Amino acid sequence: MDVMTDDSGAGAGRPNILFVMTDQQRFDTIRALSNSPVETPNLDRLVERGVSFTNGYSTCPVCVPARYTIRSGSEPTRTGVFSNGVPPGGHDAVRERCGPWLAETMSGLGYRTFGVGKFHTMPWNAPVGFETQLHSEEMYADPEARAGDAYAAWIAREHPEFNWIEALMGERSEMYYMPQMSPLPAEATVESWATDRAVELIESGDDRPWFGFVSYIGPHPPFAPPLPYNRMYDPDRMPSPVVGDAEIDHLDQHIPWMNHMIFAEDVDDLRARSLKARYYGEISYIDACIGRLLDAIERRPDADNTVICFYADHGDMLGDHRGWQKESFFEASARVPFLVSWPARITGGTRDDALVCLTDLFGIATTAAGAQELRQGTDVLGYLTGNAAPRERLFGYHGNPGTLRFKAMVREGRYKLIWMANGGRRLLFDVASDPDELCAIDDRPDVADRLQAALLAQLEAEGVTAALADGGLRTFEYEVWPLGRAYQFDRSRGVTGFPGEPADVHYEPAG
Image 1 (tube, rainbow, N blue to C red):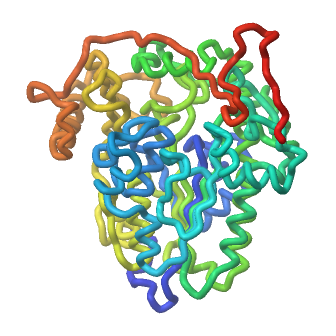
Image 2 (spheres, rainbow, N blue to C red; image 1 turned 90 degrees about the vertical axis):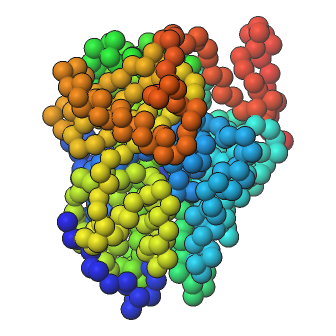
């Protein structure tokens, strides 16, 4: 489909480029693109501004790998980041394998670059090439991390009346999937802070075109929207989670293991609907913040020559398939919003079902800047002009290859294969006729075998030998994983968990 003119755009000058990212936002949470009751008037504006890709995916649906994919233009098979950690050699080793980060690349092309929000690097304050980089992370490992976090430092400096709050984005641990309200007013939340800083950076600067990146922490749990967004949605009007056969839903051991870790192994439908109401409240609040970004761009004379990409790092199961969090290849977890707009070049209000993923963002930015570098992505802008073919097949990975936690996805046409090293088990779905993935297909072994063979060939081509054995995919005897809890407190204030005895609880107000 040709929705884009085929010139370089040089006559109007190189475009500004803005990447806007949310954390843990499902694909079905934009009012203009879904039947959900969520109110998103500003994301709807973006839908009408450009192309909405309805088959956008995170190829490793969890925070750290997704972000390394975006900044490197490379898949986990090249970054080595298959879970929320970094491989031997760390942050710098990823860059050595993949090449300069996207922000570095854009700076080298003459762009003024800035990034605001959650970067989720390891270490937390690692540079990724922006001229201006303002970090705001969710938790702080020590006092130095809290003092160095741009948002937490802003709270301490500009709003000391709130600096006593340990969990600025809401309580975690046993409250991680409990409906909450932000402990802060709307104008003091991390989303508002990021928006204010981004607007300042959009409106400042020099004659260079700019590349900006705004990464919101929400709607990642805890779901704690500020007043009045916390009471925007009635839980009784929310749909209950979609569940299938329990053995199929939890064939991936990661799901029940994660449910227990985050105190969500026994969430009833009422609580699930209440959580969805707060989740939608978070999204509507962030949508209002995005509206301020759009307004700032529209005030500029070069608004039409500004590329905007909106996407999320992954989704959230929200109780679907009896799961919470992400790190699954069910659609609720792996499929994400993916909007691309450039009014000077792209026809607005278009829907497209081509397979795209976060790896493609590197190429979108560099192609728009006039110096295409796709790395492991596809040429999305070229596809929109009719000059590049769409992706035929999409692969996803999670868990370190060579371990029983390794699993993969192959998405092609109407079919999706989920393959797991734990027991060598696999699920095949027809996502066209069964979008909720309630009916695993067991009468098309030819399709499953063909997609599994494609996965094997891809891993061989990428040199991921740890995932291979005896001419096939390495499998392990099926195991039920041992359970444990995640205790997520403010370590910067010396809190590491619940006290051994209630009387031992410690609290020391911030100085």
